[in-house]
Image (cartoon, rainbow, N blue to C red):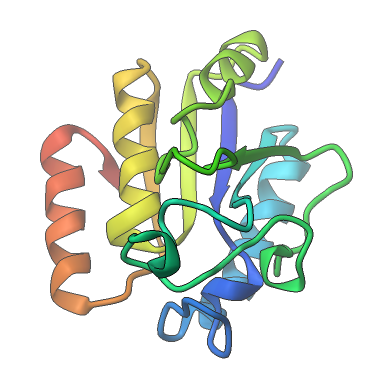
Length: 178
């Protein structure tokens, strides 16, 4: 049983240029994420993909008093993945309830249980956005006792200064930046 998992964070159409809540140049890491998916799959590692999966009236939307434009609404094109996931990838949907926000793939999901059940000890993380969902997922993975590695060539942030600060915070917390 492999002790490693690749967690692909929020690689969805709405977070790409042209989407509702774009990460600048987020599309530039699609091929790198796909490459990691292939490599980890070949080694028999578990592939996990997190996604925002918001109801129409989600608390994070501006219309509901939240900070963000409507994005990644359940069963819409904007919520679709932009990476090539294997059929047996574990899909983790977060922020699925109208009144609960979730940046981390662990928040309000059974991700930690799934990883433990599969014997995972180390997680490798790629995706968007570095200073939001990637950071929150990495920090929660640490809290749950996993060894955490960030694949720095396969993450993208929104703001370079905030991304740099997030990487420093992750490193201080114990995430290994590769």
